Length: 87
Image 1 (cartoon, one colour):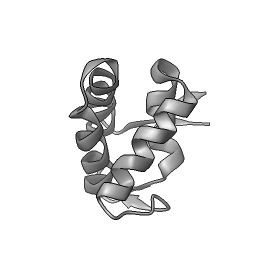
Image 2 (cartoon, one colour; image 1 turned 30 degrees about the vertical axis):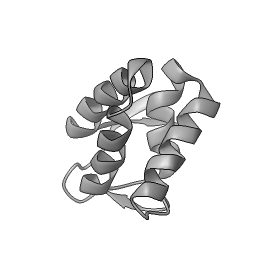
Image 3 (tube, one colour; image 1 turned 135 degrees about the horizontal axis):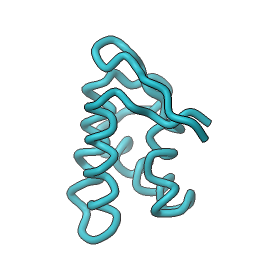
Image 4 (cartoon, helix red, strand yellow; image 1 turned 60 degrees about the horizontal axis):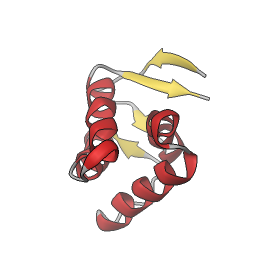
């Protein structure tokens, strides 16, 4: 897994990239579940997300209590900084 800068103004993000930001701390199954729940709540498919929509997904996940919310808040900071995990 490596980090690469992503254009935070015009770049697009995939569901898998958001899951990857969370999975190291939460495990892949939990990360997929919480991201899919957030995508569903926002009526998004996750194939191509704008910077703002990627942040909206993470903001919704960040509302959850405990470790899930903490990890999502850290992931939001990484997205804002233009750092995404590439697998």
